[in-house]
Length: 575
Image 1 (cartoon, helix red, strand yellow):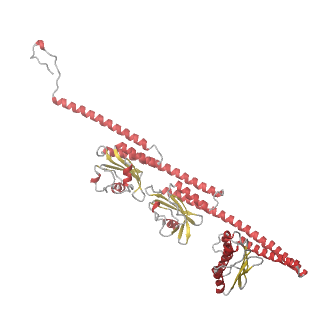
Image 2 (tube, helix red, strand yellow):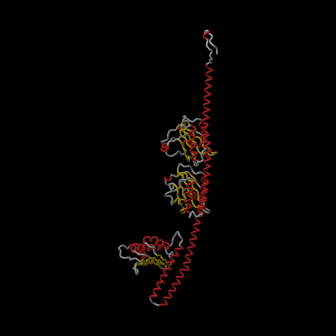
Image 3 (cartoon, rainbow, N blue to C red):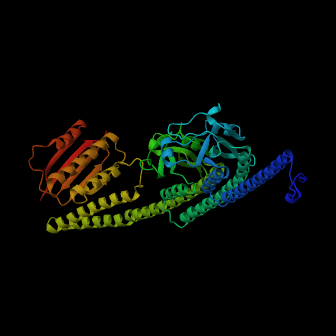
């Protein structure tokens, strides 16, 4: 400005510049605003760099669980939140999965069950638009917190959209700044968009990987059946169940087959809680498996009404998938898979892939059954051929030899030689009867649903072989399978009691059972080479046999046999 001329000349100072107060204040304000704007630009640049780092972090993996974990951790760091979570929306409503970060483990243990999509979380599911609150408790949609839950005030929630589908929601609580800003909301929305791309890529990768695994499983089962690695349908069912458990990432898998007119049978069960499920019978009506079996339509749901499985609380049944085993002409059964509660639900694509696998598996089952039936037919044909050869050749030759010996004995007259020849003829007759019994056994179909009297008598002899210490000889003559059921039960009781007595008292080395039926009478003879009946105070078993004969107007006799042993005869008329 100006200098001060009032001072003496020898004391004159240099002039100084001065400013009015008002202009200086404006300049300070401008400089302060410039510094503030620069700081905001730097902060914005830092947050954008943070968003870029978060986006890179989210898109780093293709494994969906890892992607979800990275999303919550990146969002938490990006906006400065104490807690963060991603809730995956279930197709049936609510949350199918909840991945969280920042919550201490002891707090998680105290809270117990994870959120299911109610209150504010449910509001964001019903109306997928961002929600930003300063205080959660001040919002009418808040449902409060369960006991043991840490306090939370500020809240920010944004949806994760994959095109027109809402995959889930990103939740942030407890801002380190006290509350979330509009800028925090914009950054979170931008991160959610990147997260949606990462989730979609992870889902596509998971789908491609899963589809490849299903196709490999189909090829493996088909190859196993064609190469006879799977000997029967039971082996194929076991492989199908274990393969489904692995590829479907299930906790429990069962294969359910028809068990009767109105019921199903759990044929195979593998996985967690499978012990004791195999062999369980389920009604067709009122169960998920019965519905799929009746309609032939695959189904999936979050909670299952699966009969016996649902009545087991230790199974903790959550999402369920059930697909029919479609064969060439009929539905063989149901492939049923379940995950524990809290795990993600089965997707529509998983249902399609599992259904395709089940259809191919059903064809493999049919192929295994056809092969087993073919082998069974070959075995039966061979047994029939052997039986025919025994009947047409061996028996006829023995019969001719017996007739020749009888003729020779007739020309010799009485004497020792004649007696020996006739004894040989008797042996030939006994051999012929034994061969006929063997022929019957060869012609007996395995696993017959309603075995005849011959087969049941053979079963009795087999059952008592361990206690006898030897296999008794059993011979038949006549048409035994035409005997009435009540008479047949008496015959079984006579043979069982007689052989049991031989085992308990006779100390025999051999026993013979002969059951003969004529047009009007049925006779049971049991002979052994033991020490005889002897005297005993307990004859209740023999008394029962006598009463059975008396009730039918028959006879019963026990007498010694020469040179050693006992002969028991039981005979009743056939009316």
